[in-house]
Image (tube, rainbow, N blue to C red):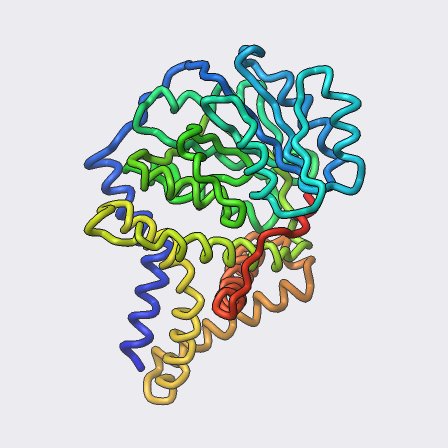
Length: 378
């Protein structure tokens, strides 16, 4: 049981710290820079929306004011069966300004709406974005810079979370910052393993086999690598969106994200073969699969230290600290006012994320596949 404890702790440490440290070493010793330049390919921006009447106007104004040649920019709204008048608003207020509506009469999920828009898009580069994500004036120009590099197949933006009055806030902040740091390192080494669903771009050929059931932000990065390209992140391309806030658990969103991620990973599992995909297979294993096994390692460490504690003071202390940590996370969930403390908020978020992963595994193994859902209120 002591070996189980140390193996579990080692697994958790590698997932959250070790992988990043190895990436840092590789980025310093064998960097693979991205060639970026101010290029202006024909771009189709696909805005995916379901019941987004309150936000679609501001989103489209953002896009229409982009500092990008208007004759090289096409804007499409992929409406996934909205019932709140989103489609009517787009047609009445934005059709004359060149915005095209691609509407699914019956709701089929984000990817099905995107697939319909991809089929009619005219751009060489397709930029996918959510209705709740805001861009700087140079956002589109920034995300296409990396396509000056012929090895790049898709580009991810940098997520920037905003709290009340535009200030960063909430439990997500630290986790998203950590993920963005990992992506920067992965990009310097070779390829990132997932894109920001709120804003990313891809070459048309990477989207040729677009799936209407698999999470596009994860799968397109994997397809790019399978086709011989790389997926990269650009810190200059920023997508701004609201943090759900410390008072909102968003547990269902985390479960949904992992179920969809597991579905993509197992559909594209050949990319885990190191003999065919080398460094990228290690990155995919380390960033995704290793992280999704962490909750099992946490349970194993708790059980092993509990069994060993009567005979060894060290394991008794280890068990007590773990139990106290889980209890503290539970208190923060019960009394949200405690989330004002950064450490308490981070602890709750860590436990909540890993509990969501456990639930996601259970749902995935029983055959659940999530295509359509209610977007998080932000």
